[in-house]
Length: 244
Image (cartoon, rainbow, N blue to C red; front, top):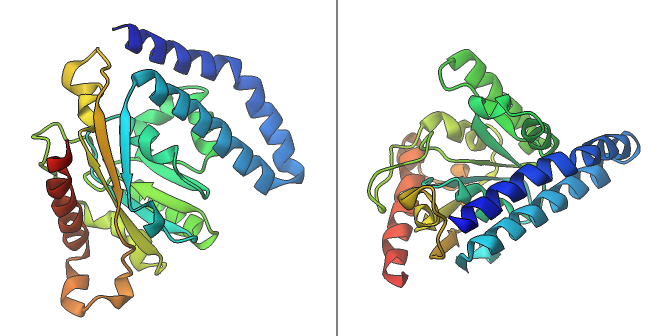
C-alpha cells in the first residue's frame, strides 16, 4: 500500500509541479519544434523510470535491437496500466500512443499526452475513430512512431489469454508501409491489477519481435494481418511464461 501512495503522489506532484514546464515547452516549440518534442519525451520518460523504480519491478528486456531506426507501428498485448510506462520509457524515437477517449478528460495529463503526439480514440464512434487512425497514419509519414494495443482495452482474463485484435488498428501499417513491431508483455498485471490497490515487486518480461512488413507477406497472410501479428505475440508470451 505504501508503494501505491508513493506512486500516486509522484504522479500528482509531477502534473502540478511540472505544469509550468508545459508553457516553457510551448515557447521552445515556437523556435525549435524538434528540441521541444525530444525534451518532452525525455522528461516524461524520466518520470516513468522513477515510478517504475518505486514499484521495485524487475524487467527482463529481449530483442530491443529488433526495433528499426524509423517510424514504426508498435503493437502489444495489454493487461496493465504499467504497460504504458514499461514500453514508453524505452522509446528512442518520438512515439505517440493511442489511448481511449476517456483519458482526454484529465487536465494537465491530457496536455502532456498531446505534447507527446498521443491520440484519443472514441471506440463508440466509428467516424471519429477513423479520423484518429488517419491522424496516426499522418504521424507515421512524418517520422513519428505509433503504439497501440489492438485488443482495444485491458485484458482482465487469464495471464496468457488475449482478446481478439481489432483489424482497424493495422491500417496504420497497411496504408503507410511501415514496419509493425510486436511487443509481448508477461506478468505486468502482477504489478498492480491482480491485487489492487497494492503495488508489489515482481518480475516482468518485455520482448520486441522482429519487424513485420505487410508488403512482404503473401496474399493469404495479408488478408488476416491482425490475426497473424496476434499469433506472434501469443506464441511469445507462451514461451516467456517459462522464465517467470
